[in-house]
Structure formats: C-alpha cells, structure tokens
Length: 216
Image (cartoon, rainbow, N blue to C red; front, side):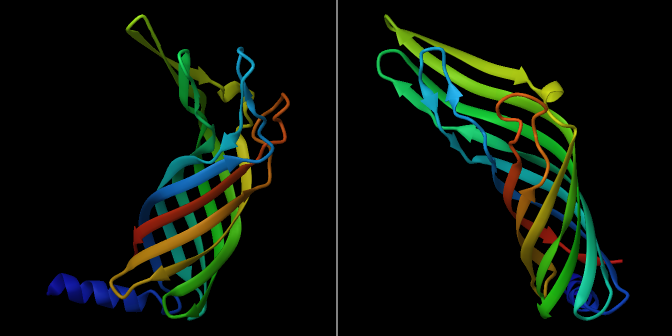
C-alpha cells in the first residue's frame, strides 16, 4: 500500500513546475543507414539493405518548467546500424545475419510539450559518440554430408566518424503509475563512414522504450 501511494504521488508531482525527475529506460530499435550500397559478394551476388534490429538502454533526466513545458537530457547506449538481406544458394552456401553494427553513447536533449496530462510531443538534438563498429555475417555450407560454418567479425571503427549528430522527434505517454512509453525517430545529420562509396550514409533510428519515472 505504501509503495502504491508513493508511486501515485510521484506521478502527480512530475507535472508540477520546478519538479526534477529521473527515468531509467530500455527498449528496441529498427535502424538503417541511408545511401548504404548493396553488399557485393565475390561470386557476383548483390544483397539489398534491410533494417537491423537494435536496442537502447540508459536514463533520462527531466525538468518541468511549467505544467505544459519541460526539458530533458539523457545518457544511453544505442546499438544501431543496418543489415543486408539473407542469401541462400541451393547446393552451395547460405549467408545470413549480415549487418553493419554501430554502437554509440548518445546524449539526447529534447524540449517536451505536454498537450494533455501524461502525453507529450518532443524534439531536439542528439549527440552520439562511437564506441564500436563492426561488419558481421554468418556463412554456412554443406558438402558430402559435411556441414561447415564461418563467421565474419570485422572491426570498422577506424573507418567511421567518431561523432554523430541527429534530430530526435517523438511522442511519449506516462501512466498514473509512472511507467512511460516513448516512441522516437532519430534523423541522422552527419556521415557515418569517413571514406568509400558509402561515405554519405547517415543513421536512421526508430526506437520504442519503456521507462520508470520518479521525482527527486
């Protein structure tokens, strides 16, 4: 009973001007790189790009300026990037899970407008700092009853820009028990790769997170 009363009180207090709150959060992402070229194999096959499944985990701090307006800043780890479609060549080999993984420490800063209690629209800037970049793939083949499997794990960090800038826009809804659902689209503004034909590739991320928000 005491825990329920604290949760309800916290949910109401967050909308009062002058309230500072913290929200741990985590969720899944659909990510892709714009202008990323097809994956061309030595055998002459070309694979089209496809969205990659990623995730985000971190926390967000929010300051309520008025009943309607607030500002927020977060600190997250975001796994994003892009993938290529699977390929199956009957009697030869299968290529699957081909992807270009990018890991970032991200700092989103947003302005939030509460259109009604619990529901907010938001927009701002996000600063990303690259932690890792890899091309991964799994190839499987079968010959004379013998199955073989090879995995590629190529470090690409030196070929990627260390800083990423994007525009996050989205909506969120907070329930009375302070669970927050957040849906965002991040539009990349800066290039991912330093050189090569895909140097104009930029990050695109759609994320859905669940957080628990409490006032300090």
